[in-house]
Image (cartoon, rainbow, N blue to C red):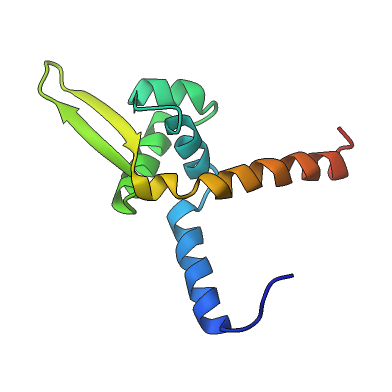
Length: 112
C-alpha cells in the first residue's frame, strides 16, 4: 500500500521521476542502452516503431536529465555513441518491476 505520509514531497518526487522518463519511448531506450553503448541507428533498430525525429528528441531529453551520456568521436563523419550513466542505471529496479508488472498485467487483461 502506498504511504500517504509526506504527501506533498512524495507527489513532487513522483512528478519529477515521471517527467524524467515520461512518454512511450524513454524507458525502452534506456533498456536498449542497458546492454551497452550504442549508436543512433542501433537504438532505432532495437526500439521498434520509433521515428528518427522522436528518437533524437528523446535522447536529448534523457541526456538533459543525466540518464544517458552522448560521446562524439573525432572521425569523419563524426561517430556518436550513447550510453547509460550511473544515474540512469539506478532505474534498473524500476525497469525490472515494470517488466514483472507488465507480465502480470498482460495475463490479467489478455489472459496470456
